[in-house]
Length: 133
Image 1 (tube, one colour):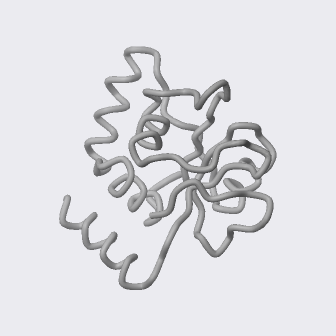
Image 2: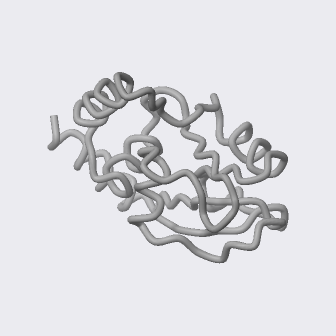
Image 3: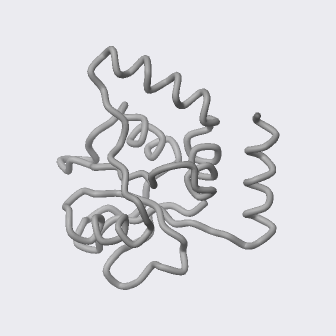
């Protein structure tokens, strides 16, 4: 199973696919480390400074989500599912999801503290890049 995910990631790299973790231009955060992102998307951390962060994930099994999970979270789907099962019993829910990159971008633009990932080609003046993978 792990080799399948690695092949997907390698394919994305070879094809030049690149994604950006974005936040609204209105937010005064200029960058995040991979560990901070990991903690936010695993709901181990919920704020940066005084700002509540709302991580947004792409719904389903899209290759971008798989790349994000492997590259940023360091987990394949099976490990991540097991993680969320354990968190459920502690009252912790996974990040919100959106059905498309367009809806992730719109959510990030309009909801204070929302954080998501989109193809780098979709980045414009309404959002800023905090991390790239």
